[in-house]
Image (cartoon, rainbow, N blue to C red; front, top):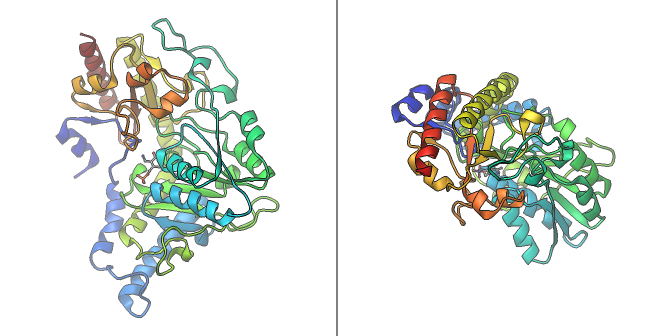
Amino acid sequence: MSLEKVVDSNRVIYLDCHSTTPTDPIVLEAMWPCFSEVFGNPGSPTHAYGVRARELVDAARATFARVLAVESDEIVFTSGATESNNLAIFGAAKRWQGKRKHLVTIGIEHPSVLEPIRQLEREGWRVSVVPVGQQQATGTLTREGSMSVPVGDLEWPGVVDLEALWSVLSEDTALVSISIANHEIGVIQPIRQIADLAHSVGALLHTDATQAVGWLPLDLDKWQADIVSFSGHKFYGPKGVGALYVRRRETYPGARPVRLFPRILGGGQEFGFRSGTLNTPGIVGIATALRLAHERQTGAAKAVGELRQRLWNQLTEWVPDIQLNGPNWQAGGPRLPNNLNFAVPFVEGQTIMLRATGVAVSSGSACSSSTPGVSMVLRAIGLSEDAARSSLRIGLGRFHTRDDIDLAAERLSQGILLSRG
Ligand code: PMP
């Protein structure tokens, strides 16, 4: 069944691509043999079944590495970005133990970054949460609020304050962990500048690239991050598979190969970083999905950016007082082309979602539902609890059409107007 049909038959327009995406039929096709004829364990070299499976994994790893322009032995396959982030943070911290004792992040990171760092803080690590640009810089949540005040590139809501970052860094800093693109407001960080600052004190940079794939060029050479996390299901690959790039080469002067202490011990698979029988279907799937995302990135980013603009134009026409959360791309703000996040003053996001039947949106990260309805990301960029509660997040994808967007705008606007009574 085609993806369009899945959307049609449910009669609900799926606008939650930051949460997950459907598996591309091309990806599924590539995975299919791994469930049947190529079912061997890639770690069993003594017979043809194992050898064949190993060949598929090797080819997938080579594809993944080629897309990123890195070496195959720099790619570690995991169960998803949660595991990748945990491995990066705990793994780097344990390697530095006794030498450095300071970690740096920002308050808008995904819980799979923040929670490991909080755990390390409980274990005695010093942690700095560097401030990010505040929402007030480009608009406030009043009915009259304007989004048009121009600000410098680095003052956009959610963008890390580089001076504050510089001021907390020292020779005690082991790791800086800042994602290149945010999962709720789509803000894109100046990752190369962050890398240069981290490296100037000898610290490593980890970046969670989960939300960037398919929308930004994956230029690891330019980013200069030492460790990078990926998740298959965010770019039309399967769930339950991810990857971690772990730099081995000297990509900047003085860079030593990154050594991570493994989180999962056992048979020593994945260069010893991550034991466990390899998930052949998942690995073939994520590599195929990454290749497709890469091949289509330029066209997809342009097309989805136009759809996002179309949706925003219609929403603001129906509901003139909705307020954009995060950087205003229309004024040059650094934002993923598929992301929208806005507050509807005086209405709860949950209420809108109940009323706007026929669209699937979210009120924030699916993984941070411990305080339902209140996005920690929005709070961290300065929104009040009320404004955060009245916000919705939309993630567009590469299969959306103009018709989907027009219908979605109408359904959402109706839902908002109904919620207001
Ligand atoms: N990082 C980010 C930025 C995410 O959006 C997500 C998924 N919500 C994750 C990590 C976790 O990814 P996974 O589902 O693969 O564990």
